Amino acid sequence: MAKIAIIDYGLGNLRSVKKAIEKTTAKTEITDNNEKIRKADGIIIPGVGAFEDGIKNLSKYREEIYRAFENDKPVLGICLGMQLTLTKGYEGNKELKGLDIIQGEVISLPTQKKVPHIGWNSIKLTQNHPLLKGIGNGDYFYFVHSYYTNTASERDVLAECRYGINFPAVISRKNYVGVQFHPEKSGKKGIQLLKNFVEYCKS
Amino acid sequence: MLTKRIIPCLDVKLGKEGGKVVKGVEFEDLKEAGNPVELSKRYNKDLADELVFLDITASSDNRKTMLDVVKKTSEEVFIPLTVGGGISSTEEIKKTLRAGADKVSINTAAVKDPNLLSKGARLFGSQCIVSAIDAKRRYEEKENKNLVEFEDGRKGWFEVYTYGGREPTGKDAIKWASEVEKKGAGEILLTSMDKDGKKSGYDIGLTKNVSENVNIPVIASGGGGNPQHFVEAFKKGKADACLAASIFHYKEYSIKNLKKELKENDINVRI
Image 1 (tube, rainbow over the protein chains, first blue to last red):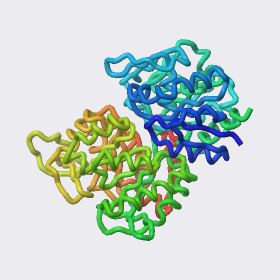
Image 2 (image 1 turned 60 degrees about the vertical axis):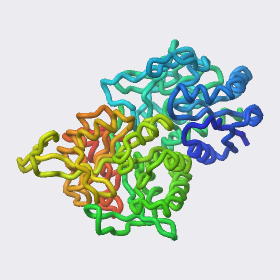
Image 3 (image 1 turned 180 degrees about the vertical axis):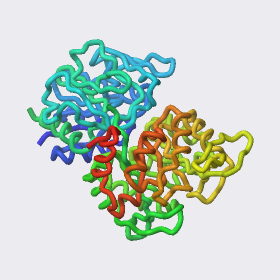
Image 4 (image 1 turned 90 degrees about the vertical axis):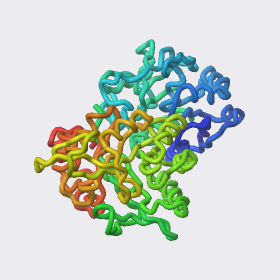
């Protein structure tokens, strides 16, 4: 049975992520312990909230995340957890450094539409990936965010979403995958994606 | 494409036995409608886009029971869950989110201290701070108020109420909506007290005026009785989501069938 560590860096509704993973029959633990993160078969970086607080609170786990990335251990970033893996983020007037696993920047959604972008939106797949097994073009996922990841290369993008502009819904590099939406809040399709992640951790 | 959301609302009355869903007409005369966890599961299967729980007793004695209901629901239902009723501090926001809620809705406490919204937004993110506004029509042309023409041609303004519709505040609802947006609310849950529980349609004037005046999503609430009411709230009222209770609780319409009708009316929904 795959063991999944959900990093508790003080932000977000972690309980829902845990309960959703348990639906897939994997063992999972919400943890702030680097030892446990190191021993897990897969890591989830959850999170909602601000980039500045997020990256500050996540810094304690930075080395473990890099180690997982180097060792091909599956890592899933959700929403803010995904955004923090980019090179840098702009919030207010500040430029903030991210984990730089995926090159690019995190910037505000254009305000010709209402922001935050809240609700169920469809995604368009641009590349195949084991994480997207059973997920098709036009499937709906639950989004809630005011910023998006402007990746430097299209090769890192697995799926897009449209809200005024096209932006990445799923990004990936090596064993790392980031999703802008909340799979733990996206009903059946969301559970399917988490199930795929658990399978990915086992293989 | 972003879809319009359909949100069943569960007014939860808490007691020792756990909690019961009730639905009132114009905020009084409550009828019982079922067990909140079971009802949530039913709505999830029926393609509800989100769920809202309102603790209508809103007393601190019952807070723990509400958190238990939230915990149980969030273990079974994997769609967004908003919880409101009597939340008045960042500590209570935190506890509610930790129990498994994704958002909290705040009315009375925000009117008393608007900084609660900014504090909550800074600590937990705007996306989980929903400003609930209960508005009632005032048929008078008063200075410094946003005047709106009602269906019958008369003019008036909308007043904000607190304490579950018991306390008038003198505040203009349209202005207040802009203020809560500036304070950091990520969404507005806008209830028409005149329409609530009557199933005669949403207050289109209220919804449209608030929705066009802010750049955050607005959830229309109060009056949804048949699919055409929802069509109007989305098309004329410019609502981003519609909340309803009785129409779903008593199985008059399934959410799926409602969504089919919305789709036939060119409204983009998740089916």
